[in-house]
Length: 217
Ligand SMILES: Nc1ncnc2c1ncn2[C@@H]1O[C@H](COP(=O)(O)OP(=O)(O)OP(=O)(O)O)[C@@H](O)[C@H]1O
Ligand SMILES: [Mg+2]
Image (cartoon, rainbow, N blue to C red; front, top):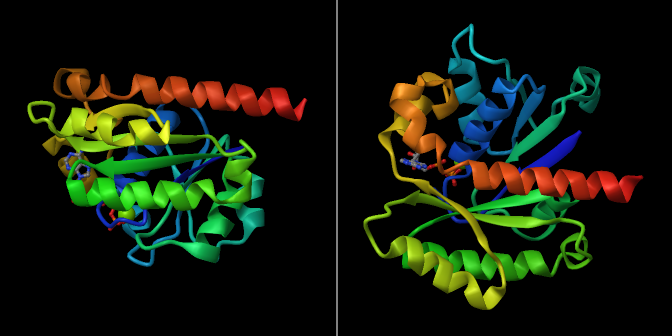
């Protein structure tokens, strides 16, 4: 099992959107996926409850779900949707549970500043310091017509952290969220452009999974 923590203490950064869409993509590739909703607002659990029959199966877990239930399902992927405001010990616990960390960042100066602070905090956690928790930053709700997209790259440059991809601002995500779906459950004719934002993230994931497998041999 490979665990991906989707985290940014800044509210509305795009955590649940990235977590649910990633889950949907992997499930569509016939992978067993569990999405663990750590947020009291239960956004991803409620999204899952709205998911119609006939779409690739994703299972849900909550913080108090018996870990045996998850283990018995033997998922390939555990995606952890973190709440806003997570810091200190709660963050340390989540970091420990993860194999890799995705940090979505919305493109406003407030989001950049808060996220830079957060990346600094993350860097202080031992598993991150030891290089055992690869981190990818993902631009979220990016409007490529504005300067915000390149602003994000420039902002993160001094931290030596790459932005793996920019997920565009699209109503497809809003409609999919409403319907318990992902953009990967939509027909190509409607969603192809939005799909194009994701391959760099999948490639990054592939590389970190390969790294983990090499180290555990
Ligand atoms: N790429 C996108 N295009 C359009 N709308 C988006 C996109 N990503 C997220 N949104 C919308 O932005 C809002 C916040 O996104 P989301 O709920 O994923 O953030 P979050 O980080 O999980 O928030 P919270 O901190 O409250 O858990 C939602 O209304 C969501 O539908
Ligand atoms: Mg959320």
